[in-house]
Amino acid sequence: MRRRAGESFMIGDGIEIEVLEVSGSRVKLGIVAPEMCLIVRKEAKITRETNLTAARAVDQAAITSLLSRLAR
Amino acid sequence: MLRLQTTYFGELDYSESSVYRFPNGLPGFENEQAFVFLRQPHTEPLMFMQSLANPKLCFILLPILVADAQYQVQLDPEYAGELKLAANCRLRIGEDILCAAILSPGHEDMPEPTVNLMAPVVVNLKERIGMQVIQTNSPYSHRHPLFGPQELVPCS
Image (cartoon, rainbow over all chains, first blue to last red; front, side, top):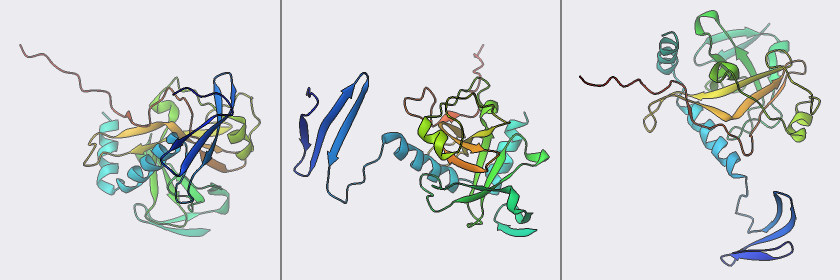
């Protein structure tokens, strides 16, 4: 699909994405979606998941094991 | 002195001047807005970022230059503003800012420990304000292996 500024497209019935502005390599998008759809940048979602995993995996044994491997 | 309960380090004494504010928390932990950093000689080079509110929440951090000596942090003007840092000035890691990667110790799905170089924790040391800087188009991985691949010894 190719779209120009001012044109939009739909995902399903409820989500509309409009290309608002294109300048150089940056694109500004407008998104209309149901309230239950959380819209976040992909890297923010990845960071959230990585943080949750990192915090969950901390325990005394993990810390001891890391220190002994780092000392090698 | 104030006293803090922690799961991994027992009771700690700390002063208000060693508290770092994260006004937006961290992604996934938006309500955790105050942390202390722990560094001890016997745990070098690791650092620990302990939540003030939650004894169980402690991130293991690795100074970014230990993870990658050539590391370059990109600080967009928006992030610099939130951290009260002058945009476009050369920031000295360790002097103006603390910059460290959150370490994920190994777990069942991924046994080897990794560090998140895509989204380092950056702290303005003078103002004691911190945030996790999520870099866009980053050349760095969010799951950078902490230890290089094991060298394979060919069978002879």
